[in-house]
Every structure is written in structure tokens, then in C-alpha cells.
Image (cartoon, rainbow, N blue to C red; front, side):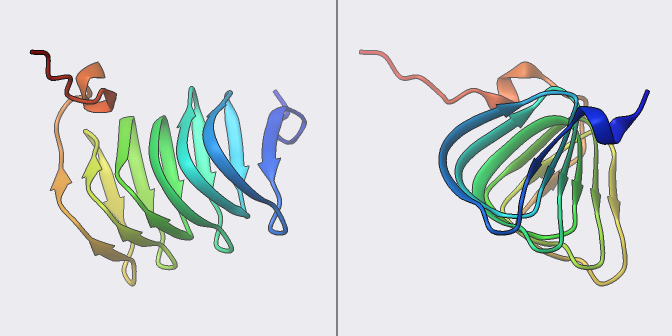
Length: 121
């Protein structure tokens, strides 16, 4: 399988606001405000700045994220990664130099991680 042919890419000059859902392979180099979910590998590139909660299967963070991160399988934070939010994943790899300002919860994925608490009267 050729990943390059199946990869969704948000370029460095792009800026989007809203809720986004991506497929198997996604690379973000631009700016997104909102929520980002992925059914596969989501890469936040070095040039990216996201003010968004991220939900996905496997996440690789090389850029800046202001928001919570929830992964079903794994999160890898590269030395250029800068996270301002909580991280939930059963497997977390932090490469020397990465910046994290938030809590880290390593436990098995549960779908409730990605749901808002609903209060009824």
C-alpha cells in the first residue's frame, strides 16, 4: 500500500475552523481550531499549530497542540512537539526535548474518553 497516495494533507498555508474527521493517514502542517478525529494515523507536523482536541487511533505530534489528546493505540511526541493539554493513551512515547503541559493518563482506550459528560435534569 502506498501511504502517499492515500494520505490527507493540510498544508502549512491552510487555516481551518470546525470539527474534522479524517481517514487512515493524515498529516497536518497548517492551523486548525476545533476538533480533529482520525480513524488511523494522524501526524501533526512541525509547522502545525492546532487549537483542537485530537482523537484517533495513533497520533504523532511534531508541532504545537493546545487541546486534549486521546488515542486508542499510541501517542508519540517528538522533540519538536509542544502540547498544552491532557494526554490519554495506553502507549505514550516521549522523545527528549518534547514539551508537555498537562496530565498523562496511560490506560486502555475506552470510547467514553471522547464523549462529553451530559447532565440531565
